[in-house]
Length: 469
Image 1 (spheres, rainbow, N blue to C red):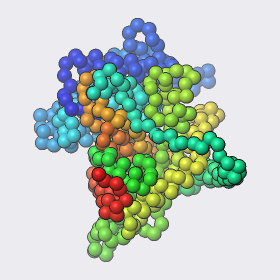
Image 2 (tube, rainbow, N blue to C red; image 1 turned 180 degrees about the horizontal axis):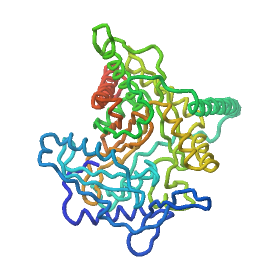
Image 3 (cartoon, helix red, strand yellow; image 1 turned 60 degrees about the vertical axis):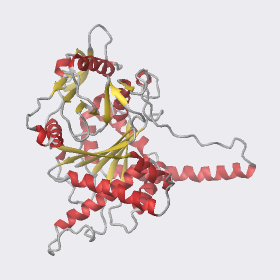
Image 4 (cartoon, rainbow, N blue to C red; image 1 turned 90 degrees about the horizontal axis):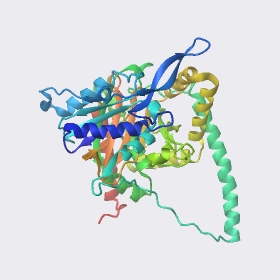
C-alpha cells in the first residue's frame, strides 16, 4: 500500500489495533479480554502422526508490526530499496506459532508514494476477496471519513417479463443446447485439469523454471497505469476489464518471449523485436483464480463473519486453466479478441466450481499432505498464475493516512510467474512476482505489458472505435 504521507507516532499503533481486531474476528478466534487470535500448533494425534491445528493465542503487536530500518543511502534509489526489501521478505516465511501476519512500515519516499505499508498474510487466513474485504473494513473514504469505501457494481440488464410464445419456445430450445454445451465444456475442462497431474505440461520456454522454483525468493515489481485506458478499450470493444487485462498480458508476454527467443538465436541477427522469433506452437497456460462464493465480489466484512452467510470468509477459490496465444499479430486488437473468446468459452463451463469441489473432496479423503502434493503437481504443469481484483472506486484512508495505490501479489506458488491486476480509483497496478533465475528482467516484462496496453488503446482511438469527449 502506497501512502501520501509518512507514518508517525502512536496514531500508527492505534490503527493497527483495529486492523488486528478485524483479522481476529473469525469463527475460531476468541472475543475475550485482550487481543486473541489464531495460530498453528503442532499436535500429535492418536497414531503419533504430527498434525497442525488452530489454537487461540494472545497477540503481541510488537511481534507483528515492524518499522523498517532505513539505510541512509536509500535516497540514491528508493524504488530499488523497496524492491530489495520485499525480495528479502520472500526469503522468509511467517512463523506458524503466532498469528500468521505481519505489517512492515517503510517511511521511504518512492516515485509513487511518501511511505509504504507491506501487509504480509498467510494464505490459510483467507483469499484475496477476504483480505480485500478486511482492508476496506479498516479504511474510510477521504471525502466522507465516516463512510466505508464503495466498489464498482455491475449494471443489471432489463428483462422482458412477458415474452411471446415463439420467444419462449426459442429460449427453451436455446436453453437445452446451452445446457448440453455447458456439460460438454465442463467435462473437457475437468479432464484437462486432471490430465495436468500426469502428462499434460506447458511447453518449455525461456520463462519455464525447473521444479522447485517455489522455494526461490521472488522479485516483485509493479507498474501503475491508467484505469481509464482499460475502460476505453473495454467500452469500445464491449468487453470486461478482465478481458482487457488478459489480452494485454497475452500481448506483453508475446513481445517478451519473442525477445527472449531472439537472444538465443545463433544467426548473429540478435533479438529484433519486430522479427518473429517464436516457435509455431507454444502451450502456455495461466492458472486463473476464480471466486466461487454464492455471493460474488468484495463483501462487507461483517457479512463474511456470519456463519451462514453466502459471503464466506476464507479460501473459496476455484481454478481455471486459461490457454494463452503466444504469437506476433499484425492487428493488436486480435490479442483482446482472442482473450475474450477464451474467457467466454471458460465462462460457459463449471470448471472453477468443479476444481474447487475436487480439492475439497481430496482434502477430506486423503488429508492435507497428499492433496497438497497432487495440487502442486497440477499447478506446476502451468507457466503462470493470474488474478484481477477490483478495488475501491474512491480515494480511501487507512486510519487517517490517505492511500495513493494498492498492489497485491503472492509468493511461494509453484509457478515462475504471477501476474496480478489491482484497481484503485482511476489507477490500475500491474504486479509481477517472478522467479529471478528464470525471468532476470521483470521490469522489461512490465514495460512490455504496459506498452501493449498503450498500443491497443492507440489503435482503438485511431480506428474511431472509442467515444472520446
